Amino acid sequence: MISSAEKVDKWSGYERILVPISGEETDREVIRLACELSKFAKKAKCKILILYVIQVRRSLPLDAAIEPEVQKAEQSLSEAENVASACECECDVETDVLQAREVGVAIVDEAIEHQADIILLGAGYKKRLGVATISPTALAVLRDAPCRVVLIRPPLSGVEVK
Image (cartoon, rainbow, N blue to C red; front, side):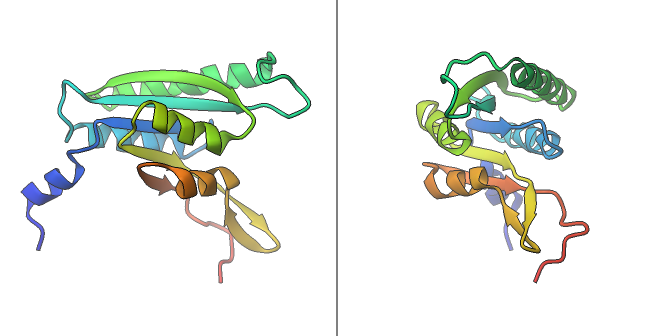
């Protein structure tokens, strides 16, 4: 049996939390989880970075102004800040927008740069050839992240899984 002190200690090391969002239904859940984890961190050091990565097609320059995507990113980050405020998050919350060729690579690079202790990633699924599959972004983060990764996905409602 695990004592409550052991439970708290298990989560207490996560002071730099990276939360990539994409404007999907799981964004709220991962932000709420980040706020809950922040309650176990040392208050003076705790930081949550909410990141939105805009994927830029190879036919465009990396710094191309993709206005609809920038607006979606800004809207998503604004909503994310509201969720964190409503949760009474006990960490400093920062937001950032990046443009990259590969979203998964950009998330891993940010985790390295910010020395993230954990990545909380919402991941949707797609039905390919009748089977629910996880996104390539989530797979890249799971494979290459230098820290723990917690993956949250919506229920597989209406998807037959074998």
